Structure formats: structure tokens, C-alpha cells
Amino acid sequence: MTPELVIRIATPSDVHRIMEIAIMACEENGFLKPNPEKLLQDIWAALNLQKGICAVIGEKNGEIEGLVVLRMGNMWYSDEVILEEKAIFIHPNFRSAKGGRAIKLCRFSKNLADTLGIPLIIGVLSNSRTKGKVRMYEREFGEPSGAFFLYGAKTGNWQEGTEH
Image (cartoon, rainbow, N blue to C red; front, side, top):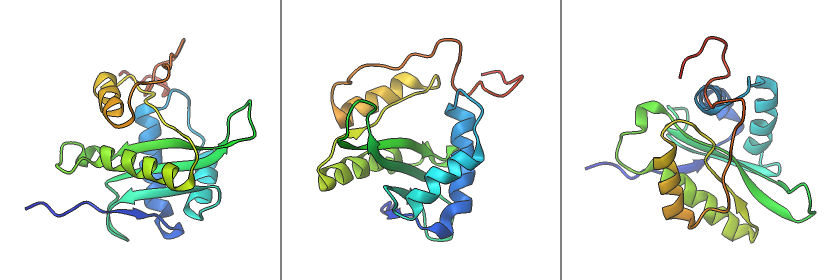
């Protein structure tokens, strides 16, 4: 029998493991070279519950199987507050494992938006396994509200000489 996956709120003591996963996410899904200092700024604020939150699947002081980074902010045209997903990422070692890690992190995000009473903006920006990811998001969130397009770039292809 598989143990129940538990999502916990990450704390500042998780920062090193979370940064490892964040860099991994950028390598796989980023389309521009990541700046670790900028990543750390958003992640550190979320770990300290400053206009955001980071939730993880994994035991305290153990391996992190997946994470979501959510930040509160505004759309460029409004003063109203939204919850913005910065990243949902499942460590490659756990993608085929049972338990629906990505779905659980999506549901955590929806529940937080409902609790706060603010809209959640969340999506898929990836050139890898995109259709399957979009189908999962459609099951969880309903009909999409548009689409992303990259011109002159491809996710996971920002490193010089990288072939994806």
C-alpha cells in the first residue's frame, strides 16, 4: 500500500533543496538563462510567507518530490490582488510514481485561492509533454483562458549548445 502524499508548507530551512529543484525546473522549462539571485528572491519571500507561499511534497529535511511557488501580486493593469503560480515542478524521479503529485499541487493552489478569496493565474509554459500537461490542467481548472506562444525561443533550450 502506498502511503498518502502530504503537502507541507516549506520553511526557510528548505531553501537549499528548493533552490536545487528550482534550477532543475529552469533547465527543463525555462526559455531564458535563469538568474539564481532572482529565483532566490521570490523563493525566499515565499518561504517566509511574504506575499506568497511555497508548498512541497516531501518529508522535512528529506528529498523534495515536488513543489509549487505561489506569489501574491497584481496584473499590470489593475490594483486588485491575484495569486500567481510561479512554478509547479515534480522532480523527474517521482513523475511516474503513483499519487498524482502535480494534481495535488494544483489542488493546493486552488484551495489557497479559494481561502484567500482571490483569483489564481496558473498555466503551462513548456515545449515538453505539453499536450498531456494541458489536459491535466483542463481537468483541474476547466477551459483555458488563452495560450502562450514563444517566438524565437523554446523552453529548455536556453543553454548554449543544448539540444532538446
